[in-house]
Length: 189
Image 1: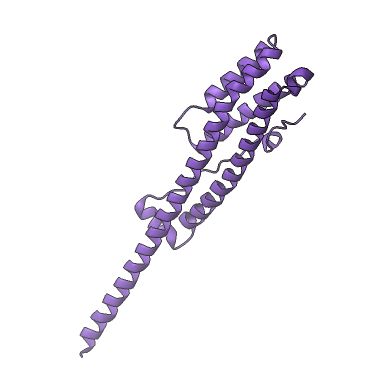
Image 2: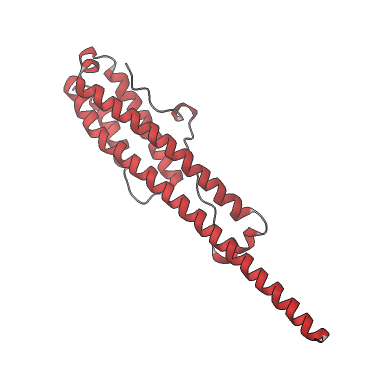
């Protein structure tokens, strides 16, 4: 075997190894991107469940506190904004923060009506909303963990080279901005 042939074999092996590495990096990025998308869909499902519960909750409170029209309108408007499809995680988080604050005001109104708080329907809606808030929080943690893993891979050398070549970008976190809304609304009386 001549020196030229050996050099070509070494170069070919290096090229094949680089291609295999690039394919592995690409596949890892695709896997992480799909995990982020799947996690977001799970959050979206829980948010939709939350949005579906709110009209029932508003109607229940309305039956006892009909004169609190401003609070009902605020919750309805916040729910409509939060339920809009096609927004990114950061914008969705902002809209959910507004909705959470409006729900807090609705529950504050409900505190003034002991008969309402004792209502079985109201208690059931509270429990369902609380359960949904817990599931949203768990989904948020799962989603943000996947976003973190994808963002690290997109930004870290040498995988960032493959990410840049194939258009992989950082994903947005889904998080509450206001420290007061980082917790699920208190729905127990």
